[in-house]
Length: 452
Image (cartoon, rainbow, N blue to C red; front, side, top):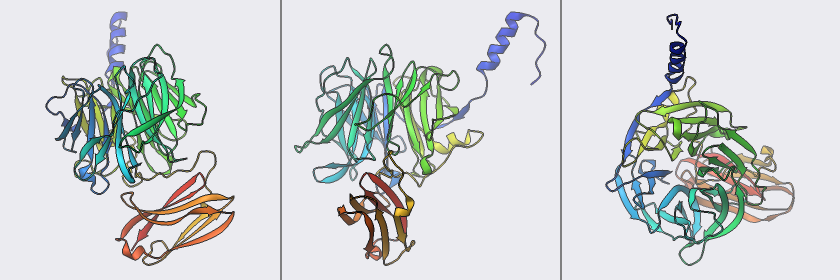
């Protein structure tokens, strides 16, 4: 672009600032809006993937002003409203939680209550798409009200955890489990300080595959921690504020999962109205930024890579919108966001199944030679060979494409050595994709098997 010669210093400064501010930024369009009657400020949301029909997946929002949870379908239509006894904060979802003898999916959220009921849990009924309360377990040891929450299923021990963060950026990690009486019990595991106590931490997300917690101190940046309960609480790395890449205040954070450890960490820079994208792998290298047309001052975000329906065939991104009152949640096509980058972002709709834990312990790599499955594709018989390097508990499980266990071929202790299993009933399974999951001690590997 050719510019006229400017002699006046004030004009030159103005032109320079103008050019800096109006540089083009990637922008995507809203597809649907979640704005039920009676909303106030839907500050955060989570995306739930239906186990059988992705088109029936849900958006569940936490409204801190209305003191309610709202449930929407993929067109932004309200399916249910759930008044709460406590003001909700951030909300998250986990899958295949063992409750009352069966596997269920849960949403969990922090409350802004100043008493001890700092977390709330609801079970998702996949048949009716309704929520059932599992209570508000008691916790203590907080400095003030909770601002943020993230749920986590460990790939190491398969246990479930809730992380909470209060207004002074104190984080506490709780193991949560079925209390045997129709509710959820929690047990404190770790506590630590996330950066300066002068600034709050609200946005947090756990990487269920890599065993990491990302916690955003709003005025400092994103601290990265080992999410396992027995690990040190010092941060592994820090993604600090960097104008144009990550600006304060840093609010919502989310994970986009893709194959081979790839994908993205996404963060909302609320103060500058854009979203930052970092690599999920390695040291979280910066990728770029994008905006959403008509969206400002975003707090919570979430993303899901699965192909859902004709409107979201390549995944979905959801975000809080503070541009108007009451505050809406906007639904955006991941493909639209991807295409706005000069080098398109990854689109991987087949890899991530949140009902399957697919990673090994970070302490050592799983030797691919330890597991052999043949033939693949298969029609009537599958052979599974595996090697145990030291005495270990070994499980071999078969899951369908929706993450439901359909066969348990092995669940016992083994001495070191080589072993062989046979699965003789694949002909009774509908044709298509299944998963073979083998756990040897703390090691886990999942292989895809095609049934023909």
